[in-house]
Amino acid sequence: MTVTAPNLRNRYLQDSIQTASPAKLLTMLYDRLVLDLVQGEEAIRAGEIENAHEKISHAQEILIELQVSLDVEAWSGAPGLANLYGYLITELIGANVAKDAGRVAVCRGFVEPLRDAWREAAASAVAH
Image 1: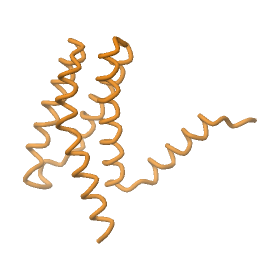
Image 2: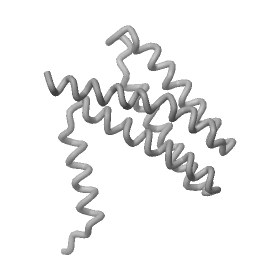
Image 3: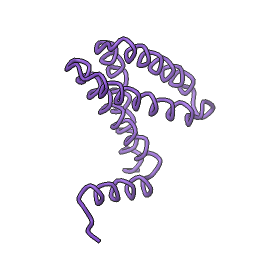
Image 4: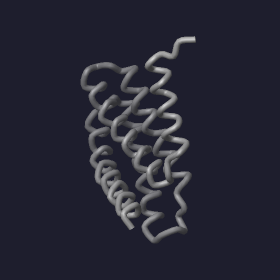
């Protein structure tokens, strides 16, 4: 049996996900969310409609996962974050239907600072 590079990569990714801390999983989700938004926006601009749909739909799935896993009782900012996730999901649905790269870019403008903040918080938690 020959193991191919894509199989090894998939195995590595699965192992990384299964052994990651909750903070690391959160930053991994945000990293993938930003990647999906960048690629979805680029695909719209390039006229690659099917690829754009796939990337934006995956971004929506990540946002839904973030929204449903958010404990709105955990801290005072959680309800606002839940509302932001809802707004982003709605905007991405509209952007996907209209194939509007600008709307995807606006969503990315909200997500990137959140990703950076969560990454900083996770690094700070590990340092302490």
